[in-house]
Image (cartoon, rainbow over all chains, first blue to last red; front, side):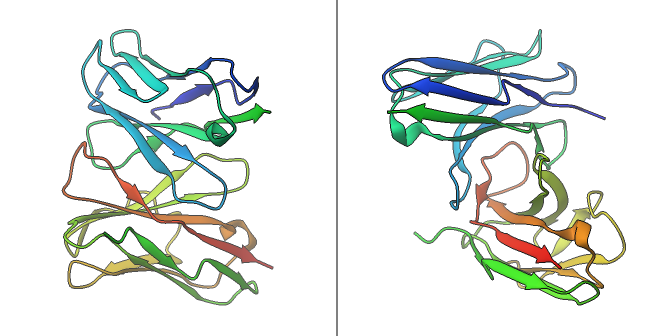
Length: 111
Length: 114
């Protein structure tokens, strides 16, 4: 069984503060790592697809890093805003087509 | 353009009834996936289609679950003789091709089995 672990499970952050959370995975047989944002009653939205060790992606205030050798990825949010409140999902392709998901980090921004 | 759509958005059924869930992928996307999220669980893979073929059905939890895809487009997930443990949000996703591409998700169908 290939487990994808995300931590913390939930997080409350004051508006304007920066935050980060972690995705950990077995480092072998790794093809790609995906980060998704899932707001309540909406479709999961892709943030990043990462494939290379040392890969770093950025979209506005959100960025992600990937360390395939040690098996982790960090997602960073700078200057949190209320619209950042969502569940953030990490998912991996382990050599096949399907995505194996973590259980997510539920982020709540406190105004 | 139009995203992935799913219907119905909510379905309440009685234990033992059959249900059909529909997914309309993004036009031209050859790969289609079904996932579900049960209460307190992460998203789990059910089945993957490439065109109309299903090379990976490994996530279907029992033989009460089946899925088909026609015309390389619409897919239907059928659950026969529903059980309470089938209650979950069922999500469909499509992608331009197989592999490490981004998967585009629909809004899901929330299934409640009473």
